[in-house]
Length: 142
Image 1 (cartoon, rainbow, N blue to C red):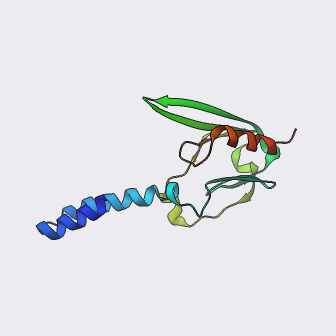
Image 2 (image 1 turned 135 degrees about the horizontal axis):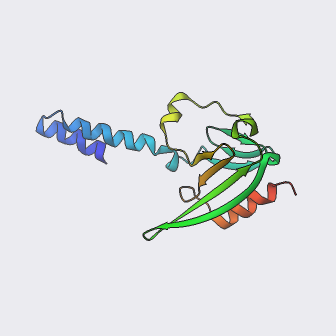
Image 3 (image 1 turned 30 degrees about the horizontal axis):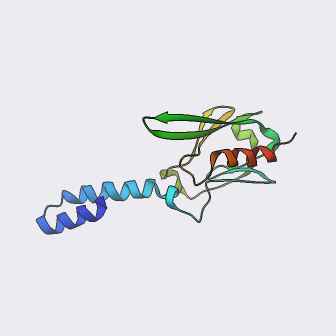
């Protein structure tokens, strides 16, 4: 919306500075595109491991624990999965993913919080947090 408004104002007023508004709007849309993109999953699970976009598969044997934490900012509920690993993250990737260079400029649902831990923002995904936690834990080796 900001991009369209910036282009429209630049043509109406003949001021090129409104194109900066358009560039900011396009940049924001590009950064948050993975949150609305339905064809590429950001999080997945199968027999190969836990899949995280732009990282690859983390082997189930290398996951020590999965916990769900809920916090709130004012009236907004935020859910985060905390993944504890047995080894450093780089050593746990069983099938690495080589993403396009331009994907590194986009938002991602996970962040590395230590050498042996990863946080996954569930509130940005279309999933019930409790069901997701139960399904992921069902893959963990007993």
